[in-house]
Image (tube, rainbow, N blue to C red; front, side, top):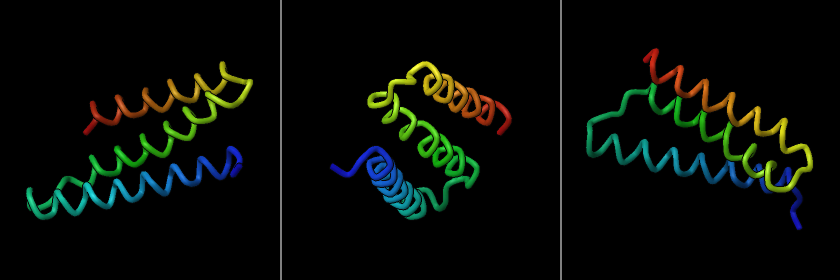
Length: 82
């Protein structure tokens, strides 16, 4: 067992690899992707997925759900602003 922190770290590193793949594909196909959208995607991924993982394993589910809702609120706000 790697524990909750190890699982969250693994998930974040996996998301970084997905980010790199999306960036490279967008560079080749689209001639570049707006960096704001990539920053928003990475913020959402790193803020949401470890919190969702903790939501499954940790007893304090109510507080982690607040973190998830706050992360999605920031994402929607950033999409509106950009």
